[in-house]
Structure formats: structure tokens, C-alpha cells
Image (tube, rainbow, N blue to C red):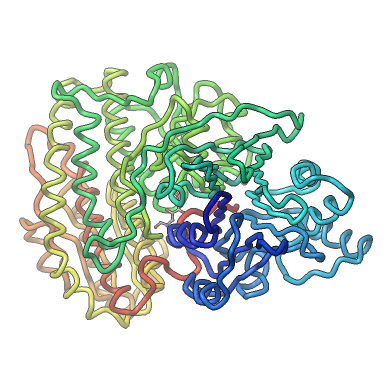
Length: 623
Ligand code: AGP
């Protein structure tokens, strides 16, 4: 998704802009650019399609001095990726330059009015350019940059995070936002920064101000930062937050890609989360979760997108199995498509790694307006979602996830949901305490079993490469491993670009099996549990129709091993006859690992852009 950065201070702006844009690359983009207020009194815009290195080459040939600048990485929504559609955009008289994240819903009307009534000539096909021209007209009418911004936010509809600089107010950067994040960074020596993702600020400061919807901020060269309410236009005192995230480490710690590094970080993250939330007396604690939030609820609705949604599907199973509370789950985008039926007894559990996904935020805001309680499971304490859920946060503490494909955030989200399920079961006395204590102790084995599984990476790699030329795959699972089949299929398709479909294994005979022949390998998750034999039958049904059969099995498996062409073996989870009902309860933490790895290795083998797959963004901040 698009990224915004800005710098105003005593140093050369360009270096800060490029360094900050470098950090935001992980979010996915197709072009980039900077605008710098030059000492000669003009605004210099340099921008280029493609990777950030293209922009760096241009700025190296044409180094721009200047203490004030804004920058942007663009993920195209309106207008193809091109030099001219890249941001920043300027007004016709080059008086003002802007960078924009989001979508201006009424840009057609605005553009027509600007062309018809003001004879404006547009340079690009973007919606964002209308903002530059609207600001230019306000400035021409004699308004300051701040008042110009306050005026135009009443005209534009949709989502926006905006930064602007102007020859008219040469010592200022103006910011505003609505349904898209922008953060101010307070640096040393009166330096001020802004960014759409605080990850870009961590190298310079941990003091941030998260601009609220429709506020307007002025960053001044003298180090002043002024924030105004967009409605009353009155100045307000902003709240300064201290960031506790680690700086995004741009080195890959010896791994070839961030994705492989993050896959291998998972056991340590699970170990850290368990230590953080499960005390020595096995009491579960959520420091940022007010206990009253979990009381007096008669319904739970989980929402999220993509991988976060699939973590939610497993969370639903854990919550219903342990807390015996009915749990519904819905894609955030589908929730937005209809009236969301919630009330003050509904607990919305919103899951989002970035905490900035537009669909999830909009669904949450709608539910909050109807009185629902919000519990957020996110990786970013500085995110919009975390702010909306104040007093109702469970932070997954996975460290910033750089690779677009979510992996470590997925297992961390699952663990937090399992701990929540146990906690709710204790609150509601829905299971005997000895069972819950057994479960808490079993969780402690997970990191080492995950490590043992990851140690088999090379074997998984060798086994998947023979399938590199396949044009389609079908992933199958049941119960706790049905969402893993969906998540594994998502990893596969988003990394290798191969058509890969995940199904509930029991659904195959109700239609999907028509797609099966020798060109469609199936991959089944066949770990011990209540659904093992049925899933094996589904796998064999596909095999008898010619499909190559792959499967995730454990080391002790004897049956599936006879039937499958290729097996990805994982260590057997500890088994207890007394607690047999939980036999596949923990399997998702293990079964997902070979699926993450085979997606990675096949994508790498096929020469795909592993950390920034085509068309994808790390955080989809537009609907
Ligand atoms: C997962 O690999 C994808 N990157 C994508 O599905 C992602 O999970 C989804 O966009 C939700 O992102 P979020 O967790 O930041 O809300």
C-alpha cells in the first residue's frame, strides 16, 4: 500500500526521505517520488515508476538541497503505474505539491469542476492530483497552506492521508487524514518527521503523535508542531505516544529473504508470548485488556481479512471448544456489505497484523457505533485499530513483519486466540480447571516442536520442487486444519502465483472433485485427530482420479504414508489418552510450517519477488 514520509528540520531532507521510503518498501508499491522545497524558492519534484532504486538513481544525478520535503511510495489504485502517475503531484502553477494515500471517492466530480470552471489541465490519471489543484486554488485566493487544507477537507470525500508543501508557506509541512493513518515524529534538535507507518520513524525517534481523523497539523521549520480540529478549526493539544516497537531491521540476519527469516522467528515469538501471558502459577494475564470487556457478552463476532481471517477461523474453533460460547466469523469486507447486527452484548474480535486494513477498520467502526465491545488482536500498538480498541488490546508482539506474506503474525495471532479461549473458559467455568491447566502446559511444548519442524526445511524444499511446473493445486483439511488448508493455499498462491484452492476436505465430493485430474495435485493435512480417516478418504478419492497426492503427516503415521506420493513429515505432537479430545487442538501450529516453507521455496525457485509479490501490499489501507 502507498507510503507517505516527510521531513522538516536543520538537515538535508532528501537523505531522510529516501531512508524512510526504504523502510516502507516492504508494504508493496509500484513507483516512488519526492518533493523538496529548494533554497531557490521552487519545489523540485523527482519521481519514477518501479523500485525505489530508480528514484535514488535520479536523485543521485540531480541531488536536491533543501530542509523541507515529502516523499511517497505508490501502490496504484486510480491510474496505471507510471512516472507521471507517481506522487508527488503539483498544482498547475507548481505552487504546492502533495502526496496522498487512500481513494478520493468524489474525484470525478471535482476533476470535472476544476476543468470546467477553472480550466485546469491535469497531468496524470490519478484521483490524488485533484487535491493539488484544489489546494493551489485556495492558495491563489490568499489562504495560508493550513487554511487551504482546512477548506478542502470539506470538499473531498473518501479516505486520505495527505502531506503538502508550498512555496507560499516555505517553512511548513501540512498534514491531514481520514480513514488512513499518518503519524508525526518528534525528533532531536527540532527536527520533525511524518509517515503513514511509524516503522519509518523508528530510526529517528520514538516520540510520535497519531493524527486523528480530520485533524490538520502544521510542522514548522522552527520545530513547532500545531494540531487543529478540522471541524472547529481550533488548535488542540495533541497526545504524544512513545513507540515501543523495535526499529525495522533492514538486514535479513543472514537469511536470503525477510520471509524465511520471519518463518524461522516463529518459535521464539511463541515462547515470548507464553512467557508474557502465562505466569508461573499458570494464570493467564492480558495487561492491555480490561477484564470487564470479557464479561456480560452473549455473542462473539470475529472479523479480519486474508491470513488474519484464517487465524480467526481457528480462534473460533478454540473459543467454542473451550469457552462454549457461539462464535461467528466473517470477512470484514463482507460485514461491510450488509447491516452488521451487533449490540452492547456482542464482543467484536478484530484481527489485523498491521492494524490499518481499511476493510477491518471500517467494519469495526460500524460495529462500535452500534454499541459492540471491541477486542483487537494486532501487531502494531501504534495502529489505528489499537487506538480504537483502547483497553481492549492483545498485542501479538511478533516484531514488525516486513515480508508481505504473513507468517509469524499468523501463528502469534493463533496463540493469542488460544490463550483468550482458555481465559474465557476460566471466566465462564466451561471446562474443569485440570483440563485447562493441561492445555496451558501443552502449549509450552509448541516452540520446541516448531523448531524441530523448521529444522526439516531442506527436506520440504527438495520434495516440493518436482511440482514446480504444476498449474494448479488443491489443499484439503478438516476441523482445526481446514483453516490451515486455506492459509496454506493463500501462501502458495500469493507467493508462487500458481492457482491454489483450499477446501474443506469433506466438501470435495460436493462439486470441487470435478476439477481433479492428473494435472491437479492435492495436498492434504493428515495429522492425528478426529477427522484423520475421513480426510484420508478424501485424499484417496482424488488420487483415484489421477491427482498426484501430497500430504502433511507426522512421524508416527502408518496409513496415509502408504497412499501419498509425497509426504511432508512433522514431529508427532505429545498425545494423552485422557485428553484425546484435544488431539488435533494444537496441530495448526505445526501443520502450517511446512506449508509456509514449500510456498517460500517454490516461489524462490520460480524466481518470484518473494518479499514483495506482484500486485500485493503489506497493509491494504483502501477498501
Ligand atoms: C497474507 O499473507 C496477506 N498479506 C494478506 O492476506 C493479509 O493477511 C491481509 O491483507 C490482512 O492484513 P492485516 O492482518 O494487516 O489486516
